[in-house]
Length: 120
Image 1: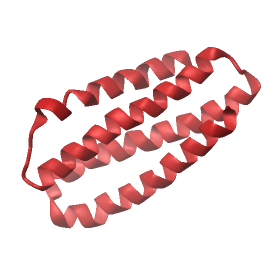
Image 2: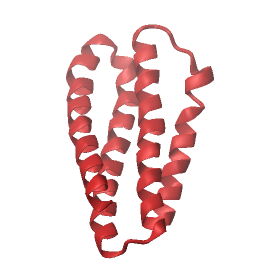
Image 3: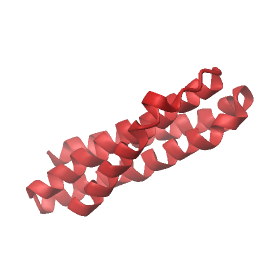
Image 4: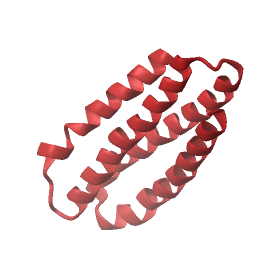
């Protein structure tokens, strides 16, 4: 199981670098007002990609259920928190701002982050 968390964390970190470069260069040209929201998503994705790598390292030494659940929470948190911020940035960049459905997902993802840190 620990290798899975190492793999997912590494993949999310690599994707975070790609998205960060996109946000810093191309998105800034297309829709500069959506860059801060996008950067927040990238920032939290990177933090929690590293947290997943940490879970992978610790899970090998301490294979307890709470460690497994921490990894799951971090992954779900990235999907919901960062993913919703990416979608909101895309909607804002295309002029289709609609916080009604997507905006509520972000704090749910944040809650998964908090639970994950508590379980770790």
